[in-house]
Each structure stands twice: as C-alpha cells, then as structure tokens.
Amino acid sequence: MSTSCLVAGAGLCLLVGAGFAGTSLAGDRGEPDTASPIEHLVIIFQENVSFDHYFATYPVALNPTGEPFFRASDDTPSVNGLGTLINGNPDGVLLTDNPNANNTSGNGADSINPFRLARAQAPTCDQDHNYGDEQKAFDQGLMDLFPASVGVGSCTPPYDWGKGTGLVMGYFDGNTVTALWNYAQKFAMSDNSFGTTFGPSTPGLMNLVAGNTYPATINPAGPTSGVAAVANGVGTVVSDPDPTGDVCSAAGRTQVQMGGKNIGDLLIENHVSWGAFMGGFDLTITNSNGTTGCNRSTPGSASNKTATNPTGATADYIPHHAFFQYWASTANPAHTRPSTLKAIGTSNDGGANHQYDLHDFFDALKVGNMPAVSFLKAIAAGDGHAGYSDPLLEQSIMLVPTINAIMRSPFWKSTAIIVMYDDSDGWYDHQMSPIINPSSVLNTDSPGNGDQLNAPGKCGNGTPLDGIQGRCGYGPRQPLLVISPFAKTNFVDHTLTDQSSVLRFIEENWGTGQIGGGSYDQLAGPLWNMFDFDDGHFPFLTAGQRQLILDPTTGEPSGR
Image (cartoon, rainbow, N blue to C red):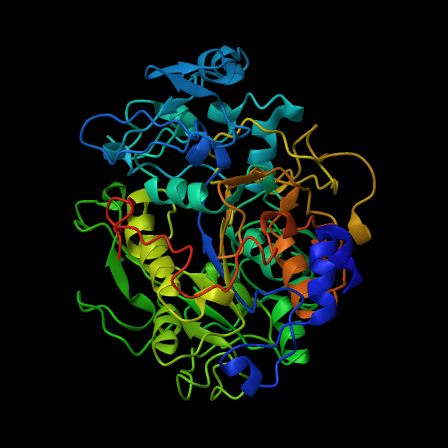
C-alpha cells in the first residue's frame, strides 16, 4: 500500500507496514487486514445539497429566538463560504453584492443576493439540477446565472418563500442544520469536495460506487432519454434512468444496465464484507399508513403536500437512487431478503447479493454484525431532497438516529462515517469547480442533457478521460464530513476531493486495487488528511470516547 504512504505521511506508512487485524466478525470471515485502524466504513449518502446551501456562513449562525442555539468553539477554522454575520447582518461581498444580484442577462429571472432560510422555512421547492443546466448556471466560471438557469419559480406557494427563481440562492445555518454543524465542530469536514460530474442523483451514485457513468446499455423496450453520447444503444448516464430489471423500476422511465465494474465487485473479489442498505428495499413490509411493496411511503416535507396528498407522503424506495442495482453482478432485482442477520454483508446471504433494506443495517448491528463497508440510503422522506424532504426531516429521520446508533455500538472504535451528497440540486455555490475532465456533447433535442459550460456542446478543453464523453467534471461543490474516533477535531480540510475519493479510500484501506475502465478513481484526491492515526492523540480508544450523541429533533448535544 505504498500509495497510502505517499498521501498520508509516515504515520500511515507505519500502520500499513504493521497491518490491522479485523474486529468482531471480520476475523471470522477471513477478511484482509486494513491499512489503517479504520476497519468499518459507513457512507451515508444524502440528497441534493450544495456546500454553500448548508455551510455558507459557518461557523456563525444568526441564533434567533425560538431556534436551536449554535455557538462555535473559539478556535474553529474558517471555511471557503459566502461570508459571515456581524451583529446579525451579512458581511462579505458574496452576501451583499453577489454576481447573481447584478446580472443583467438573466432573461428576467429573479436577481438576488444569497439569503438565510429560517428553520420554519426548511420545506422548499426542488431546483433544476440537470447536467447541462448546472453548467450553464456556472457561466464559464462567473457563477452568475443560477436564478436564470437552475432556479425554479413555479412550485406551490408558499414554499418559494416569496423569492421565485431566486430561491436557489437560499442557505441554511446552524440553527436549522444544527446536527451537521455540531458534527463539524467535533470531527472533520471538507470545504473543497465536489460532485464528480454535473447533474442529478443517478450520475452521483454511480460515481460514488464506480467512478463511472459509462457504459450504460439502454433497455430497448423503453424510453431512451437521459443518456448522452449514445452509439448502438450504449451511452453515458447524465440523468436519472431506473435500473433495468428492478421490480420497482417504472415501465415508462428510461432503464439502463451498466457495464464494467463497481467497488462491490472488488470487495467481493478481495473477500471484504459489504452491503448497500436502501430505505424501502424490503417489499414484505406494510407501513403504518397501509402502503406496502414498491409503493411503501412515508409522510414527507410540507412542500410535498397537495389536496390529494395531504400528508406529503413520498415513496420510501426510489429505484434511480439504488447504488448497485445498475450492475448485473451486484443487483438484487427481486429484492430477495437475506437469509439471516449474521449473513448480511457476506456472499452467502441467501441470494440478497449484498443488497438490503436500511432496517437490515440496524437489525444486524443489534446482533453484532456490521459489514466492513456499508452504503446507507435513507427512505426518501429522510434523505434531505428538497421538495419531498427537508433539512429537519433529514436530521431527525436519518442522520442523527443513524450516527447515534453507530456511536453507541462496539464498532464505533474502529469506524469512520462519511456523510456526503449525490448532487447539489442546483442550489447556489460560489466556488467554480476545477474541470479536470472535459466533454463535448451537443444535445439540441435536450440541452439540459448536453454540455453547456463554455458554449453549447462544450465543457472544458482537452480530451476526455479514456475518450468517454458526457462526464464533464468536477461538478458543483458539496458537503463532506468524516465522523470517526480517528477524525481530526474541529478540522476543515482543503484537499481537492470528489465523490470517487471514497473509492480511493476503500481501495487503499482494503487493498482492492483500482476499478479501471475509465473510472475517476484514478484521478481522485485522498481523504487521509481528515484523519489522525497518532496513538499519542487517541490512546486506548474505547467505544465511549469521542462520542457526540445528539437530539434528533434539535441537533443539539443530548448526553446519553
């Protein structure tokens, strides 16, 4: 593992040389030693948030009466945000004289400065986050066409909060996303992490698990939109097709199956336990509202309520969010249930093929089983996606209960939790991404699915990685937090990373080798700088050390 030594310094070189035996079931399963003390990795993959949307004024919150209070430690480092608040007033040119407020070529869109969304305004409209439209909002790096290009002003009142297309400029602070700001205080966060490419959910999850959105074979029996650079029915995913063969995939939606490998394939080859845990995946359950099967649903955000849907209910399971269902090698198209809780994470799980419901993660945890690598997806109501979910539901349904449960388990002392997002939803972020991989797809029929950063059909300069078009990146900047006994404390990492940096971490920590086939893992920046493995800093770790148990409702520390 010499690559780990190069990126992490001498401390990790010593760890790699020594090796770390797996704990609990790892040794029983004959799993390989890890290159660091991290023997369990949990990726909580949430929905549709830009960095500035959640951390624009970090670490300074407004703290109005009636909202959870947040005050940062005096030694908190600054982030590359929009500015700060002084006596409750915005301070900083991006907050008071933003390019999007001064743009005169916005085609009549609502020109507006960034503004704070209060806790009572957590329910909002979903914004436009198409591959090409996001590039157009970036406007060759001027970052000044967000209301005009990705702002959505047609949602149900009052959930644009009177801002029209300018809602896209809104941000929350530590009085609403309180848990995430508290985790950032105790552990490590990045302010320089990006979506691997532009676009919505499915490209993001594919980049997380494979570093690639190509080659996608389109199901010839259905629609073909949302796949770019198509030749002979094979192309690059730029939108949200469903996985071919999933019993919950919609017949009227484009369906694709991916070629090449994903990280699950490498983990299987190297005898590392792993699982993908999807909210709503178990089709045998009947919810309290009587819904079952693929139609299981849960009340969502107030912005999702209509006259015919008074609870704002939204489907628990969304097929185009299902990480590994796109590859035949790792799919569980019938949603077959695992044979036993102890078998979860293994290749002898009764035909579930490492694909489980989110409740299986917690059920297995209770019987002393946590796979070495776990990908977690909330039920839709708790995934944070604007429109049907929101930051408060994300905090109370998914983030805090999940992290509390892991911290209270015996696995906490050898675990790293990564909280990250699939795409930006189009929400404003001021930081232009470095274009490390260009593309030149002209889509006159659907410009939102073609390149538009520099001009119609153009995003960046040069030759695409392995000649694969339709993968311009990096895309918008997004939050990334590392929560672990070994995470640096109250630390902001500026290392350039992206969604596929998780692949690099897994590949180096478990020695799996790289995916190949044009995967972005060969370009990904490392996550190692967010950790501190110095024994002098964290001696004789026990499960109780460095816990931060929060209240799911307020996001504030709650003790035990």
